[in-house]
Length: 132
Image 1 (cartoon, rainbow, N blue to C red):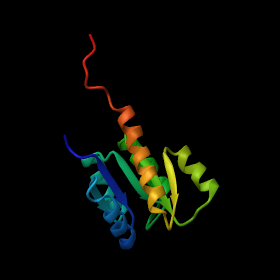
Image 2 (cartoon, rainbow, N blue to C red; image 1 turned 135 degrees about the vertical axis):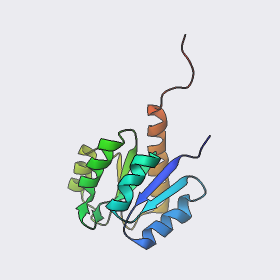
Image 3 (cartoon, one colour; image 1 turned 180 degrees about the vertical axis):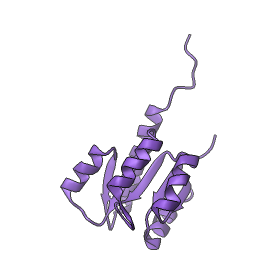
Image 4 (tube, rainbow, N blue to C red; image 1 turned 120 degrees about the vertical axis):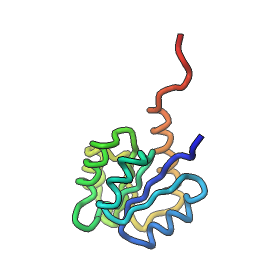
């Protein structure tokens, strides 16, 4: 069985490197530094969980979240942002995000939220046991 896929979409190199150090051995990790690079990867690789930066060049995270959910409904998206606002968190959930993490992030909190997102994906997956 293939490792679950975690995708990171963030234009900050340091954030991507930190997350790779935390999750690189646990999941198959894909990364993109722009919307243009990310969307074909989302469509082709069908990641299970996506960590999405809210403030990306040329688009905002909510617009990108909406596009991701249109092409890959089954993935769970966690928003990463330096703008830690309850209003933004609520808006992200309305657009389909399963969670929200402020930057700088706490590694324990990040691990817990990513694990919870993978649990949500597993619950949605169709059972492989035949029913008779």
